[in-house]
Image (tube, rainbow over all chains, first blue to last red; front, side, top):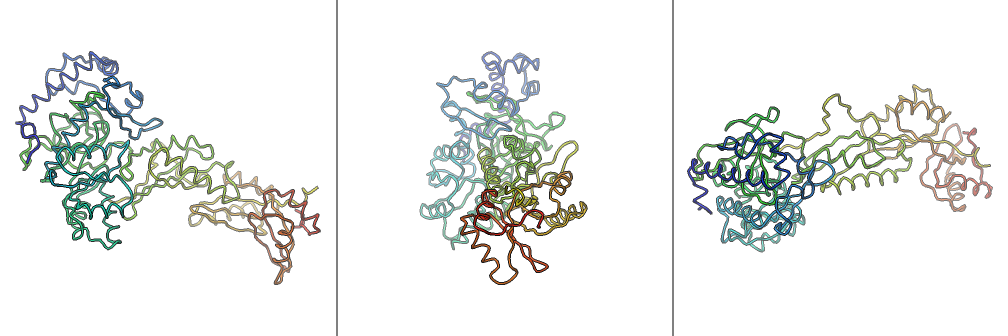
Length: 432
Length: 142
């Protein structure tokens, strides 16, 4: 079953031609009509006429998260507000968050991408899917929601939290598929066990679309065996729209639709282009974006391109499961967290100094983040109550800013490690 | 004047890790500071070590120099009888004077005992205690 067989099974040569035409149009449009992209191309000394083949993409300058930060909120938008139908917001590296915008066409191709993906894993008409990604600023909930409705599935917009109620609804509504983070599904399984519910016998759950955080094939085997389901990897980031691409039933890499995006893999240090089968940093150019085009966006996820034929018959190139990051971004319960955000928050709190350590642990299936921070001598009180208030205030400030629960731990000055050169302020004890 | 009744307590911030108290104790020993009474308040992730020492001003300076977070706070000391009911007499007197204790601890040895306690306003509290005829220890009596 294909959603769009013509595109999904298009011969590679034709697909590449389509990509080249898409790229050419995109570059011409942006060079002529948008200051940000025009200046960026000019600075890189490249003009639309320099793009005469698909491989000429390497002449174009990279984009980074800092471009989104520097142009916050809408300076990079290439559509007027009357054409922008939605915003989503994700973590920025410091200060301001990252804002992304969508035209109706942007929502439509995002939905189309997910419709193809869900169809490739056999979710469609007759399925009831529980979307347990966060609804709201995060792209996960609404993205999956639209995609699942498109393929004719019945959507339960469960969002996150209240696991007991989610399980009750899963049983009552005979839910057949779920979309959430892999760790949340494991947590659900744990809670079900405690409630005396057998996921295999008491629910109709058969498929899971899991992503928004790194996971492993070991974790997949564990989930599939424990819950008696098939689990598929989904990939995307808000900058390219949101979650967009999944594995097909073959589970041999994530299909990235060629008419929507051009992928490159680069060496994160030298920025040199790497070939299929070589691990590096994923760079994406989204051909169809209108409100906020992305050309050669450095996502900073580490993966490799697999261009071998897939058993499903789809011709689009695939990427291997994401194995890590080329920067220091952490993913805590599906939320992106940059150590620089922690630092930025702590700088606003006069009672602490700039020395800190981030410790991440996983208890059961859930992530726990602790920020150890050195106290300034003037802020010390002999009353434990005062200290606890300070600790709570720091935890709340961090939570407010990072959108994820954080436990602050007060430390004596000089007790945290000092670094010469590049600081290693993250201790990640999670085993995936 | 109630100044002479102010007992300077040292409070030290300690990380909640094995060996941290020994580190503080070693610093006190290096500075040749004798501890008369102390207690440890523990909380999630950290502790506060509070102590009555001889020569608190010198101790404060030397510990600060070592990069240890230390704070001087005025507390009040009342002598207690080292026998059953000793604490009752003292605490009842403090309560009758309508003074709220934030925290407290005791010293007992050589046949004498003292109750050290922290209040919101030490000067006012000492005034009330003296007015009620309760014996309050002076700094040089510790």
